[in-house]
Structure formats: structure tokens, C-alpha cells
Length: 75
Ligand SMILES: [Zn+2]
Image (cartoon, rainbow, N blue to C red; front, side):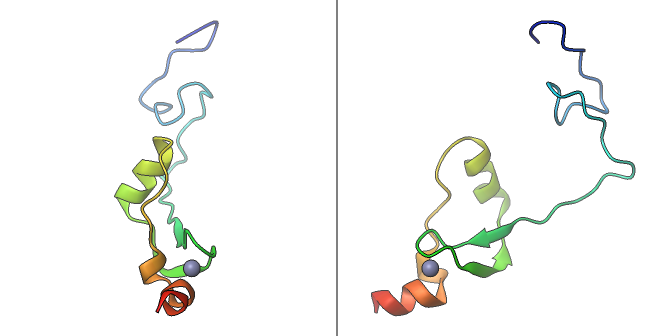
């Protein structure tokens, strides 16, 4: 921790720098997965691995073969 930021507690660990309390009860979010090529929303949510890649600052895996528009254009 830096500066005068409060120490995280078990209730604030998900965003320790913001010291935001967890919602009660905890809320589960579902992230839509969009195509890397055209931005089309795919018919499935993002996987844990895809979300982790983006959080780590990496590009999400290429899903253009799953996209009805991009896979049709590539054929
Ligand atoms: Zn696409």
C-alpha cells in the first residue's frame, strides 16, 4: 500500500486501492464476449481465461473463427 490508503480488509480485497466494500450479498457479473475482428457480441460469455488475460493487460484470445460474420468473410 502507498500513501494514506487504508489497509484492505477481507471485505475490500477485490479493490484494495479504492477501499470499496463488497456488495452484500456478493454479486456475480457475467461478461459478454465480443469478436476481435468486428466487435460482434458472441452467443457466449467470456471465459475465466479470457477475463484473466484482459485483466493482466494482454489481448484476449482471437475468437474470429467463432464469429458468424468474420468466419463467413474468411471462407
Ligand atoms: Zn467478427
